[in-house]
Amino acid sequence: MTVEFFDLARRLYAAKTGQPVLQVAAALFTVTPEAIYVDAHQDAAGKVKATVYRQGGKPVTAGGVAALRALAAAGAVMDPKGPPLQLITPDGTTLAALGQIARSASRHDDDTVRAASAVVGWWIDRAGYPGTNAVVNLLAHSRQRFLTGTLPSRERTAAYWRSEVFSVGDSVAGLAAWAARIAGGEELAMVAPIREDDAYSYRAAAERFAKGWDWTHPEPAPVAAMGLRVRCDTADLWDAALRSDRLWRHRAVHTGHVTGGEVIFANRAIFTLACPRLDSRLRVGSDVVGWSGGVDSYDKATLFYGDVQNAEAHNGTLHLTISRVPYAQRPNPGQWVTLMPAPPNERTVRMGRSRYRRLLFKGDSWIASGKTPGVRRRDVPLDVLCAAAETE
Image (tube, rainbow, N blue to C red; front, side, top):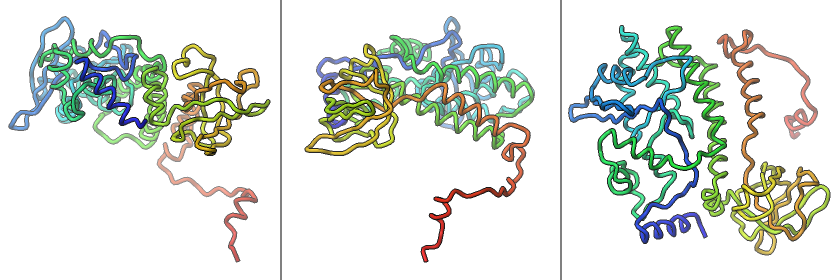
């Protein structure tokens, strides 16, 4: 079965029951006490109007600088000692509209307005990190966590989820009810590092703001390079976090990211399993995490880590040979084993970032100084020398 047929079957079930079907069992975000709900749009004249709401307060609708003052009144301030602020929007157009207002007021005379503008700038930046809790796009999260019994094209509009699925109304206060409906349940444990990055990033942005930094200016090369590194790390972690969810793992079987088979050979160094499906995305050299049992045994079994030493098709099955697994954790012939890509090692990621940060920001870094690196002479390995040699 392909993933398209798998999704179709769930859509048909949702249509039969009249209820949305979960794609991810765990919550993908949490609503924080600092949450600010905003719904913004452009009118026929091209002017942006934003409605700002915070739990316990009254909605305020304004445009231009007044919208930024409403955000500031709702708590959008740059405080390096405070918790990161959370923006909850119905879809992606709201943040884009806020960005238009914020860019024009980044150098406003009023410190309150400038601070609110900088907060919007930080939200725009964090929106590029999958799994962030700083910016919650309710439409995107609804589509990630649920499937309904309608056409996929209808699911691409916020109005469909608000009125027909969750019945929360069109007001900005309805966003709070919508967020509560899709944030229910225990949050994915693996997203904790992303939450830590939210807090670290907010403190760094607040400190830059205090020093007079204008967020609309292009970032220095070291800052941009570090941001790209963190985005890539976050994307890898988010993919792994989704696979840690029991429902998403079942879907990942049909995308080839999760596979399983019976162990047909094992010794003290390696073991081989025969997978009935040939469409696995695991390749030679892939780091994998595995466990004895089926897809649902992930949370109950003892996990082992290794890598794919060999992969080959044999009589309609895929034979995967796994190495680097401690002997005490190695499964025995006849056992069913499930495999999927190994999640990023948090300690390795942190150490890699730390080394990268030192290279970028230390005083003699050629990227930080803006100077062209000098030529360094060093011995060339013999295999590289032979590969570069002339053929004649």
